[in-house]
Image 1 (cartoon, one colour):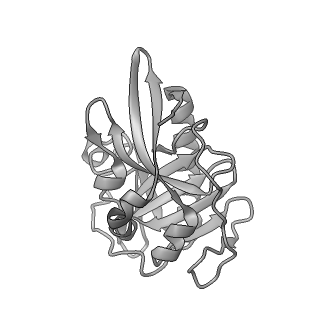
Image 2 (cartoon, one colour):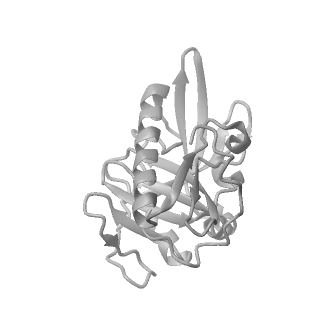
Image 3 (tube, rainbow, N blue to C red):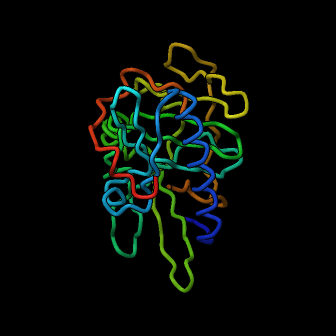
Length: 222
């Protein structure tokens, strides 16, 4: 399988922009809520949680953020192996987040996925989707990330509670299988010339999974 190398600087820049979009949308979606950035907090790094979303009710939801720079892709990149050389699992498999906020940076789209449900749907179908390798250079160190490339349409049709918005006008995008949808059509193939999304919403459906209770004080750099 092909792949390309990308610099850590470029990868981190995409991640930072995605987090900014996610934070802004969460605060707009739930006035009076608070967002705590825990990307650098070791207590949350191993859980795959980038942000804590503290709702006015006191409920706290874990959020994982992904930024995708592909200009044409209508496919998610679900990270299955974060570092192939060290044999470390990808955050899609181990993240304890309640929601994944997946930002298509070039298209200006933000998708909200109930992560436990998406993972439960994907695992029995994993062999149906192609794997993609990407290489990231950090100084003298080069590592490989492996992920599954999954069409937006497949996830929207298979998992209840997936939603999306256009960032520029903050208007709902209809996804196949959702009550209010204008279909987001997947592209016809995954390019090896673009990096995978980088880690760090629209109104979150009420059935987007049972949130976990976490203390809002565990915020690290929030």
